[in-house]
Image (cartoon, rainbow, N blue to C red):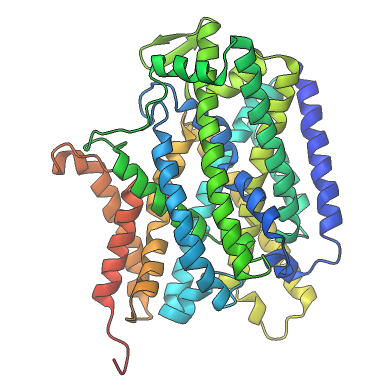
Length: 502
């Protein structure tokens, strides 16, 4: 299929986003950028969050996990174990964290740490968010940019670095003024196109293979693609680990994440915000399952075109298509032109929500939590706006550097990179918030808090690295986030003292 034609659709889609951004960012100010003037419609936020949470990782990487290949931590539908954990975690967010954030009227959720544990804990927690979201967002971005470059722009002679720069510039342009007020609408649009891509590809492959839904499930079951539960307690994929880890990942990567909560606290009131999270939890679980179902269909389709397993690879016409390469290779080289176009639209729709919200949230957190922008005496709205825009551009440049690093690392299963990194970077946040919410003790407002939050991930690295040797073959997997948070919590307890008068 013509690379020029596909690139034309990418440009047309971007122009549509610019139009939406122009209409929604008129008369915007810093409050519009940070929390959408706290006037967002909860249904739009819930629907748009699907695209933000699932992103290009779900669109490309999750279907690829269905095949049996080394190094992923998953095979068949085992990723549903994590999804079940996510689902449980969203209820904790809805009924524990959301009421807390609204009660305190927070713009940055990390202000909770300031009031509860002091200035150092607050700055440290916000800093870990900046690290976590930068790494996670750029990993997601890398996956989709790499697909766009390899299958479209590489044929046009465009270097990977230029591809990355241009896409980041696109994202910067339509988020520059409106912030949250804009991305509530653009994420809704993009989620629609992403789900359209999922639906069209699924329907076409079912039709091409002559399968009903029931026939497809039966065929996948015969191939071993429908197995969900891993009962090997020593394995990284053991189902209780996956569910527990998934629960804490959703609490941390959504409930303790400024990007995701920034949209939730932009809703008019706490009741609507809770409805948003609950509705989102059910829809997210369903959509994630549909991507796994599509993954099974893609492997069946590849087999029908002559693909064969060679050890832990799946070769089609001499090309290894397993993992992240599966969906884009089949969609752009083996499916009809119309389906290829819809795939590209779905892919870029998965790209932008995971990037625009992250860029906006990082800007918000840095301005509010590190620069204390809202309380700067003598700074008028114009001055604050200029600082915020400078920070926004700076994070876009940081994204560029991080994506180039991921290109150098060049992993074939991005979903595992993100889950692994989350275990290290979100653990201290989880521990600090848990200590603040579930105890009444205070901790010292000094360098020891920073040292603790750095030490916990280091200990977790060695635990993960040598767990098999130390614990009789037991491998630490996705539960690493919980262990990291627990170590931070216990460290806070050791440093803490009872509050005065207790």
